[in-house]
Structures are given as structure tokens and as C-alpha cells.
Length: 182
Image (cartoon, rainbow, N blue to C red):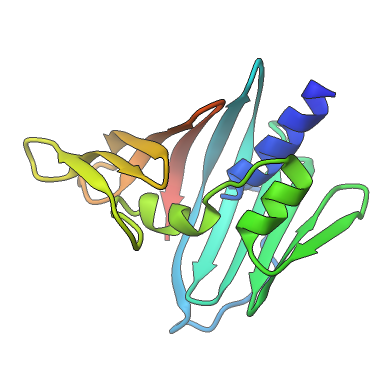
């Protein structure tokens, strides 16, 4: 049971990466697209741990996240379009909710701040109160928001975007290694 929960946690917590052979399906208009990223994700939930690949296309009102296992096989696809979010599993099962947090709470048993992730992966706080510590170069080194602690462990070659992050919340830790930004 715990292994299944950890796999689900990876699928949703990842809500964020994909294998090179997998393609995202949602095509956002150029003026709607805010970023695309691809990389690896690891999640530790309680005593269980999993890892995989993630691809995420984020727009103002739409998102698509594809999560695959290390061999490139699909684990989950999360799509936010307009006013709802859907999560599809490899067996074809589909779960829907009005927002990602409600969906993850229902499927996983706890809420994940997927809305905040769009800001956090870009090294900025989301709406609402937060605390931030900056490094000597003025970049955010650590951010605390909505009960989460986000640590920026490494930056890309020009120092403009984070390439490695650790997100922690009581009972869960996510590690994200972003290999590609578009």
C-alpha cells in the first residue's frame, strides 16, 4: 500500500517532467505559453521513495505535465485546462477536480501546492505571504511559502534559472533536476 501511495505521490508531486521519447499533447498558443521544462524528479513520501522523468508545459490557464518512470514508460499525465484538472494513469483511469490541490488530496490523501510550483520553479514566490533568503548574488536561495520550504541548490550556466531544487513539507520531499528550459 505504501509503495502504491509513493508511486501516486511521484506521479502528482512530479506534476512537473518527461522522458525524451514522450510528447506533450496540449498545444498552447505562443502568447499563452509561459515555460516548458524537462528533467528528473524524485519524491520521498514517508518511508517510500521513487524517481522518474518529468516534462511540463505551463501556460496562463493551461498546463500539461507528463511523468514517466526511469525507463520512459508513462506513470501519469496531468492536464489543467480552463476550470478543471485531470489526472490520467497508465491503466487509462482518469480523475478530475476543479483544481490540482483538490485532485491530489482526493487521489493521494494530501494536498500538493501545484499552483505554487509554477512560480517556485522560476525562483519567485507565488501570491501570498512568504519568507525568502537570498544568496550573495541576490538570487533566492531559500523560500518558505504555504508550509513548504523550497531550496535552490544549483543554477543553470548563466545563473538565470534554477536547475536543481529541493521542496520539503512535513512527510514529503521533492527533488527536481531541470535539464532543459524553453
